[in-house]
Every structure is written in structure tokens, then in C-alpha cells.
Image (cartoon, rainbow, N blue to C red; front, side):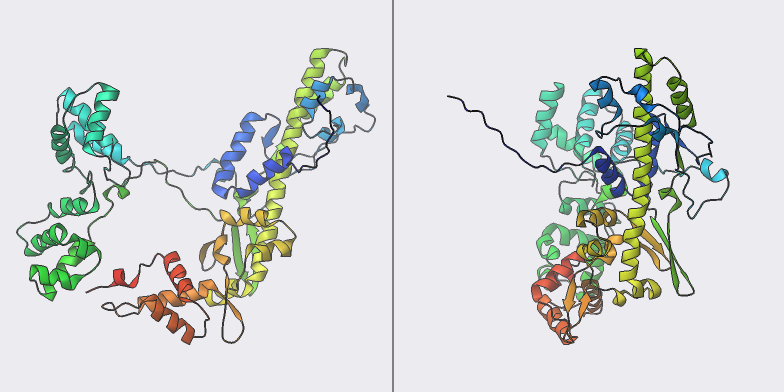
Amino acid sequence: MQKLSLNQTIQQRLSPQQIQFIKLLQIPTYELDARIEEELEINPALEEGMEMEKDVDLKDRDVDDFDDYSDSDLAAIDAGGRDLDIEYYLHDDYSGYKMQGDGMGSDEEDKEMPIATITSLTDHLMMQLGFLRLDELRETVGRQIIGSIESDGYIRRNIQSIVNDLAFSQGVYTTTEEVEDLLAQIQLFEPAGVGARDLQECLLLQLDRKDLNDPIVLYSIKIVEDCFDEFSKKHYDKIQKKLGIDDEVIKNAVKMITRLNPKPGATEEDGNVVHYLLPDFILTNNNGKLELMLNSKNAPELRVSNSFHEMLETYDKSDKTNRSIKETVTFIKQKLDSAKWFIDAIKQRQQTLLKTMRSILDYQKEFFLTGDETKLKPMILKDIATEIDMDISTVSRVASSKAVQTEFGLYPLKYFFSEGISTDSGEDVSSREVKNILKELIDNEPKMSPLSDDKLEKYLNEKGYNIARRTVAKYREQLNIPVARLRKQL
């Protein structure tokens, strides 16, 4: 026997306005323009430009004249679930927000940011393939090989898999010998080293193009061919013993090998857009007084369309029993509502960005005044979130993709967040300060006998920083510094 039961639950859900604000908050400045253009295209009630003063008196309007809509009409009018007032749309107090960069004249708006374009690696190789003047079958095989080359210039698929791909996908039957023969020709293309199956082959392809009458080139080839494992581990003494060469020869050979390009395809990007970084904030020091401004691109001049205001007034005076008029008013209200929500979200974005950045500025004031990294205080997301009374996730969205222009350079906001390390004096210092000292120790270490993590830990402890060896290793990896054995130089 079935039983009916009633359960009451509480759920927290984001409104459409909140979702829109979150999306706008996390995008960086260079993407904001595209987002605004997208909204301008889909919403005719939203326009660019400053809001003009309007003398509209709607105090005597009977808003209830439009209350005879169906439930579906009301749902379309108001996604937020509240009653809407026509008067709400006919008064607009939004205007352009003047920021740094305003007032430069109308020509500034007409200027477009140039976007650099480059040829992809695949296109570059396909062009060179055409110079071989192959028959149709071999050209198809060549295209398949080039299509298997990854963005860094390596081909990691085995030859048999390429043969199988040609047979099953294109009905082209060939052999591994024919594919390897054509791959050898492609490996002669520019850039040098392209089409290699591993690093060893990549280095050999580049060395083969050098002057083979030079003894250093020949020794370099021999090292890569016969002593690659020892070379990768920097066991130079074993290489000398195995090949019977002196210190000067191995030093020059190692220098030549390390100057080769380990990723020949890295100079050619698959994408055709070069990203540029724009600051979201501009910070200036005016005689010791820090002044913070938003980048003008964060403050677009947006307004609700005057023509939509006029349309709403016109339809308000029309026959309210006509269904087509009701549907038109529904559409106008919906677009006006969406436009106001978007302007609200943009304005709230500006306020949140400034509020967060001002808190960071107060927290790290000594750094912004001097530019001295040792003045950075330990600071985590929770510190700023507590200070401005916002959620940690909101602060994280602001910090994740924003940057500030200072007199000392352009810094991502993430740069100012770091953990704290205790010292012998009982104070906490920023982990960034410890990283700088760690990097300085490694830069000044003996190249023939680099400092191990244990020795680095000892030196840092002597300087008063209470840090463990595993933390030293973590910071070293974050700085992209290899272990001592791989830092060894001749």
C-alpha cells in the first residue's frame, strides 16, 4: 500500500542576477569589452553612452492597467518573481562612470586594439610539404604525419598507428617503411628538430644541421647518441671517462647541446591570437598619498534606450485589451528589465573590485609605497574577505584574473597573497620573502656543487626562518628550480 508523505526542505539557490554578477566579476578587463558587446547585440534596450536628462512625469500613471496578463506573460516579464512597475522603466538614474582615461575625445573610442596573428605550426609544415612535389598517395601520407605532430613539434604516435589510421579512415594502404621514409624528409623541414619522436632524436636532428667538420659538433653528437642518460643526469665525469675527453671539450660540447631547442614547435603557436595583459587598477603615489583608480575599460558608459522608454509610453496609451499590444509590452518590459540588471551588475562589479583592491592596498601599504618585496605581509583570502565582509569565493574571483599597475610594474593580485613563516623573533613573514632569499641562495651557490635542500634548510634556519626541508623543496618547485643534481654546471 502506497503512502503519501510531505517533506519540507530548505535549499539555497542563486538568482539569475547573482549568476550574472558572478560571471561578470571573474572575467578580466580584456574580456569585459567582448561581454558588453555580446549583451548590446542581444538586448536592443541597452545602449552605449551617457544617460540624457529626461523630464518625464508618470506620477498619475495607472500601472494596474497591465495587470490582466496571463501567468505565462507574467513569468516572461519577470524572471525574478516580483511585480514590475512601468514607472520603474521610465526613470533611469544610470549615467556614465568617469574614470581614468575619460575625456580623451571621441577619437579614442574609434581606435581598435591591434591583434597579432601568426601562422600555425601545421600550416607552416603543410606549406613546406608542397615543395616536395609528391604524388597524391605520398602527399596524403605526409599530411597524416604532419597532422600527428603535436604543438611542441614532437610526433608521439607510433608509426604502425599512423599506418592503421590511413587504412581505416582514408582507405590508403601503406607500410611502416614508407611512412618512416617520408617522416625522415619531414624532419628536414623548418624549424629544426620538428617531427622528432623523443628529446634525444630532436637534439640529434638539430646537431646534424651544424658544421660536421667542427670537432665540438662531433663530440656533441657522440654525447647525445652514446651518453644521453649520463648527460640528462649531469654525470659529466662519467661522460669524460667514457669518451676520453678533457674538461674544455666537454664544457664546450655541453654548452652547444644546452643551447639547442628542446621544443622546436614552441615558436609556432597553434592559436592565432596573442593575448595581452591589461591592468584592472591603476595605482599612483602622489607625494606619499596612494591614489587608486579603475581602468576606464572597467567603467563603460551604458544606458537604457530612450526609444524603449518612448515605446512603453506609447503602448501605455493604446488599447490595453489588444493581445498583440500586451505581448509587445511584455517584450519591452523584459528587455528593459534585462538592461537594468546588466547595468546594475556592471556597477556592482566596479564597487566590488574597488572595495577588494582598497583592502589589499591598506594591508600591503608599505610595499605599495616602497616596492620592496620584503615589506609584503603574510596575507590570505580570508584576511581580505573578513575585512570587507564578503565571502572568500568573491575575493578569490577578484584576485584570480586581475592585475594592478604600480610605479614598480604590473602585478597580478594573486602576487600579494602568501602564507606566513615564523621567525626566531616570533614574527610572521611572507613566504614570498623566503622564496626570494631561497632564490638568492641558489643563484649564488657554487655551480660545480649546488646546495642540496638540506643545506638550503640549514642556511635559512641560520637566517632566522623556521622552515622544514619539505617546505624548502615545495618553494623550490614553485620557483621552477630543479634539484641540486640537475643544477650542476661545469
